[in-house]
Image (cartoon, rainbow, N blue to C red; front, side):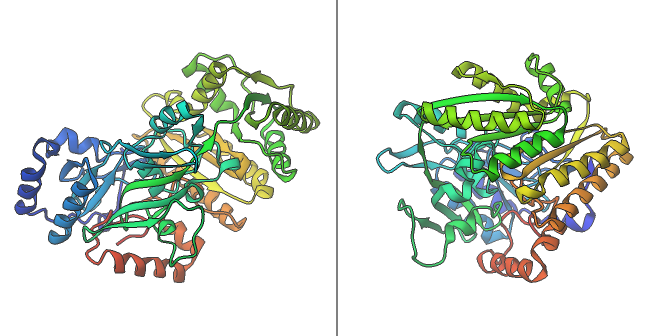
Length: 470
């Protein structure tokens, strides 16, 4: 059985017939109450089992989003923004029923200002769609969480990914937003300027708000020139400790590496089977270097010497675009590949982030704990910025496995907080980590967050029950 939320968190609200009629009149076939469609929009990659939303609405413009939100606010009915459905912490689950507002059809790239290195897009544009458009101008958007998520969803969860060690996260790369607030008003935050000292930083308030303060409809983002030279390499190590220590030294020496990803032996075994590769089943760093040909060569030489000192093998290079694409596709498939190693399983996936100097300590302790239980697992991580993901594979029909996974996850997050890290480096809080947010930020800070939520959303319609129970 899947994890069922406590009844006190499931508080369905009535959806008046007048609201449904208003939506049907405005949206026609784009207002859908069929069970199959509602169930599709009521599941994500989290292990929770929650009833589906009452209705799904497909919006195609900011004006349509504003209409839905204003009508929902009038009737005090929840609105859950929906993009690609790839969240891992229960962000899109309709714990209080209501409207799943799907913005995935808002797919217009509105403005590309190549001379200023900015782009403005609708919220339903995906990362791969944007980069396909930018490639013709010799530009790219670097934030790469793995899943082909919508950019609106990536901003809402403050997404990160494989390139964050060099290019930062959605927080650093979002210059401005268009947002529909809980009252149905359309507002704009930020500009195309690279910095501003004008008023409160509302852009950062909405980035990472997980849909609880408003619906993002447009984004203005930083973009970057495609690097002159790109090389990817894999390096195998005798154990995880050596791989992680290499990553730590790369960062401490200031090597401007673009990507530095860890896959443990279990993850390698999974991607070998899924992507028909023949990688050694040993802990591996998958790295990418960007820059001029000379700087890429210098970075690679430095990292190779560090790896050798810690028992790493000589690099295996992927210098052609096709070879690099195949390697990174395998990395991005790691989650689904891992699920296929235990047919019928679900994953309890925990991501934490710690100061880089404490990374080896927490990975070693977490591996020892899961190994002692015999539970299946695998590790992937953006170790260049101290972030990694532990996926515990459980049989949903065996409650004891779920309990073991949750206990291990709790221990790992508690340890991360003790090491002055965070309960989530990029997945967000959602439903799963609400208690940890209090542990991390403190009661006073969470109370302040609640006050902001109450001020901006007095009827509590925007994705209620997420970040903190309400």
